[in-house]
Length: 408
Image (cartoon, rainbow, N blue to C red; front, side, top):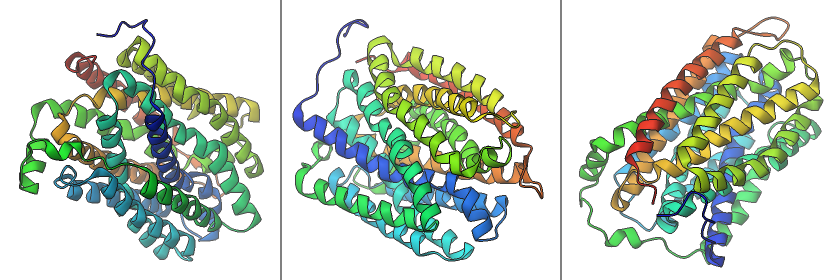
């Protein structure tokens, strides 16, 4: 067993390529979801919709993703993972294109549903590929590097998306995502090798039986619960995050790209650091520290009024640092829960639960927050309290999982 102080094993050249491609895929998927948050300050007046309607748009994406992930779970381990990835990624690109063409609330809602139907499966396939190709002693760094896609979406995507939206309109960022995603898909098609070793393992021939075996596996219960609660923070805080920053913290909308840019630059370093720390010092200790930091910043941030720009940037950096130190080790730790023959279906069910929970949370966030005539979001602190409560419960679940998953 690897000593906590030992140097983690190095990656091969092909492994580096795979991680880079998976990170790029995550970049486009996360950007497609996250771009809705800063665009909320633009879309609300452009389409003349309420925070509740915007919450429905975000939650519809999540519900659609959850449903498709669940339906795909029974088949997730029956095909080459590369082919599955490319099929659903193509559908995701089509849905994103429809978002760019939407001109009304109803069309945007329909486009987000289509996008979610395909995006919901991609995340689970990416996690299955990462788990198939990398041993436990490398997974912390793998999850950290893939997690840098989140930071890259802030450094490159969100500021660029906001600038593009301000220069043209809010539809333009979706067209850019389609262009980037198409190029990445072509590279994966011709360079990435098949990921089909799991096909030689024994599994149920019937898709429903395979799904049922995954759902009813006792050791999966805690992981499903933890993954469901982990979705609470992002889906409750982010959809109305830009509107809260502009209307409550009194940050000019022209300064929003600076906030996301500064936060994203810091997170580019935080993702790999969190992954390396997880492999070196242990997944759960890093998750514990990240949870404590996240809770502290959430309680401060959601109760703020008018705040200087520098303070908002610092708090955002600390908040996302805490999120990364929860996200990276939790993904690495829970990758050791399912057996190889059930990894695809386990990740698909997990993605389903996360998306459905996220949809509920986005809907609740839109229902809790009330926008005053001057734009001020009222009752936003309540959202922070809900996120805090979920974080405490998740911490207990992760401690139990930590006791059950072998270190190697």
